Image (cartoon, rainbow, N blue to C red):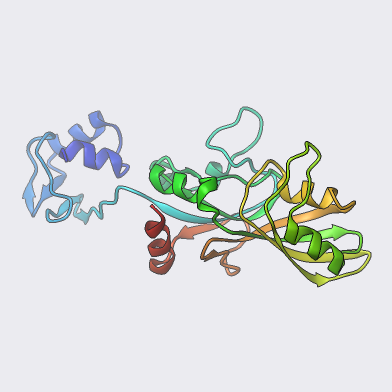
Length: 237
């Protein structure tokens, strides 16, 4: 990889900015002053430093975001803030995008990456990656509903969902549940409950595949995936 491309990818500015850095003798390769922006770098073996600080090169970024309500699961939007607006500049410059989507008023686990192959694998309907949601429901949810969901329900447009695993946490005038599904149709969880005459008043995704939302992560905050979480993701590619 060219030196200027590597440094631009790591957020040191445009190719023009990087060339100026090199011209100013601020960049070293294996402790030698870099002289040419087009010199080839082995990102696995060569050590590159800028202003004396070692550059830890990475091609892809993998983030877990605790999405708050009010943000769009997109990279840009003309009217609302997007989840990308929650990122620090040093992470946003990698140009990550959401893996799948959560509705604007839905909270919880959202993965962000610039690894297109992984994003496709995790969202492909054929892979049937499980997604678990916690929800507050207006109305009583019963064992009969568990049975209905286990067979799949019919949505308002006639679509027959795949079976879902419904677990009742609290049953009453206000119920609390967990629902695991393997699909991601538009507003699917809300529409599944509407099909049984119930209304979702709060929705939060808590799991995707083997990755569970880190409850120590404040709403609106994010972190890089742990080694174990990343290993699971990379096994899906």
